[in-house]
Amino acid sequence: MDDRLYRQKLSSRPPTSRFRSSQVVLLIEYKQRQITSLDEEIKFTEVMADLVQTHANTIPALARGFLECRKYISPSDVTRFLDEHLRARIGTRLIAEQHIALHVSSQPHNTNPQQLERERQSSYIGVIDTVLRPAEVIRHCESFVSEICELKYGVRPELVINGMSETELAHVPTHLEYIITELLKNAFRATVERGKAKEPIEVTLAACPSTCTPSLHGTSSEEGPSSPNRLNNYVPLDSSINGITIRIRDRGGGISPINLPHIWSYSFTTFGDEDELDNGNGNGNMDALNTISGVGGESSSLAGLGYGLPLGRAYAEHFGGGIAVQSLWGWGTDVYLKLRGFGKMEI
Image 1 (spheres, rainbow, N blue to C red):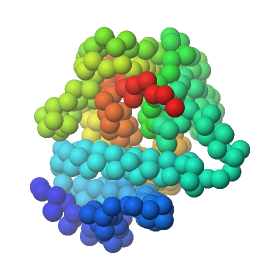
Image 2 (tube, rainbow, N blue to C red; image 1 turned 180 degrees about the vertical axis):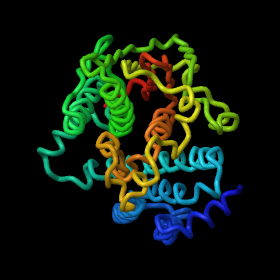
Image 3 (cartoon, helix red, strand yellow; image 1 turned 120 degrees about the vertical axis):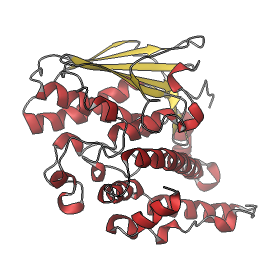
């Protein structure tokens, strides 16, 4: 099925029909136009900011559109289509947000001396934190997930961080927060529902030297219905990259062999239809642990739609990282998150 048929089916559904007008690209007038003055740059940034805001809920709308059209479209076609389009969207949105952040922090637009001094001392370049500590992001996400877990189940498993917890790299914090939150909520939920709440969830960090060539086996991020053509056969976890590997280990019983082949498929979820579509707003009676993660506007409206792992994989792979899953059915799961930094950056 080609893209035209996808658009025809999706645009007829209520969740996506309201976005048809937003498909008009607001930046067409700048395609063959140079920005030569500060006023023109300010106007251009305003257009980009409006574009980012307009498309803030595009992914949840697509998710519900595909959910309602799933009897017409095979899961493999959905995954292939979304792999391509969501990755393009991640890149486009990141470029737009980076420009907006640099615009706001640039000296011509900011005359407050105190704020300028704070920005000079900041580790950020736009939306990129040049000295991001994954261990701190993990603790932040743990606090958030554990509170929801305790609210839902009355208990919160302990999370232990070991390994090279002081490791730093240049990365986009919001991307990492989304990925870690998705992985932790899966680990927390599985651990509690397995009756292993007293067993700690173990997170290990290992900085990868520039000469390392990690090779992981199992259900890795390159596997899935669309793997032959996805990302031009790029294998994220087998490339020589200077970054960090994060392992999240739980005693939640592992992933059923029946479900394991489908974990990278968009819209694969253990929730029933009534929960998935309840009230059409992604909240309803869904599990609390599936209403909390989001980045760039995609938050609770993706709850229970099965986009957590595939979308997290897309964010990881955008800069050459990846995710691999090793499940020991009846015992637990190890998830390996490989992050590639942007290299050493000097401010």
